[in-house]
Image (cartoon, rainbow, N blue to C red):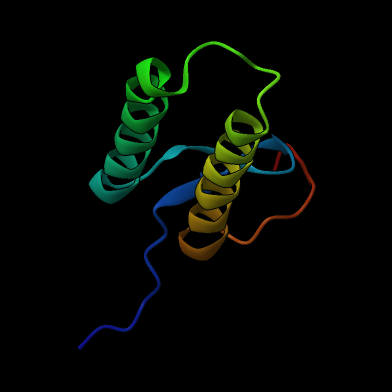
Length: 81
C-alpha cells in the first residue's frame, strides 16, 4: 500500500497560508463552511455587536484554519517557489 501524503489544500505561492483546495475533500470543506456561514445568518441576525455572533465567527474561522493546518501542506512563508 502506498503511504504518500495527499494534501487537501495547497500552500499559497506567495506569503503564508493555503490557496484553493487540491482535492474534492477540500472543496467539500470549503462548500460546507460557506454554507454554514451563509445559512446561519437568519438565525444569528445581523447584530454584529452580539458576543454570541463574535464567538460563532471566531469558532468557524478556527475550525477552517484547523482543518487547513491538519490536511494542508505545512505552512511557511513562501517567496514564489
